[in-house]
Image (cartoon, rainbow, N blue to C red; front, side, top):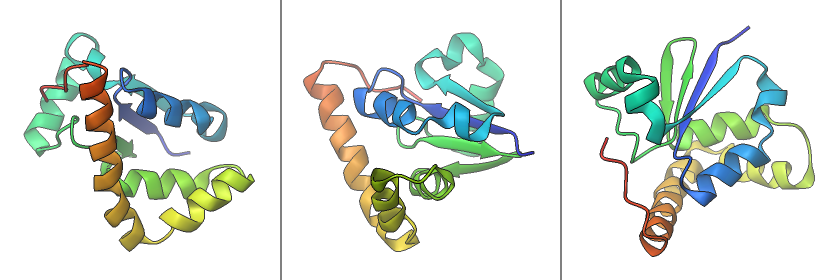
Length: 127
């Protein structure tokens, strides 16, 4: 069984609701969820590894699958393809099964997240 670690911005309502809506724990079982804002206290070595690899948590949702890091659009694509069947998930899968559409969409989603954080006066992650 794969060991998965998902790092997301727990203070971002969009990110938090996406993770909750995916029912990820039920789907994957061996999935660990980490709020990126807690990394300095809870996982400083992991934060150092991300920094060493040039992975900016503020710029991407990150997923480690058996030691390999996926980011941004790759994460959305993988999660959409592995999630349970429902009309919402089928629509999500249809859109994100295409790597091109996923790469096109992710910067727009990230811009929406950044705008929402600014409107809510939530500071961006410094890493």
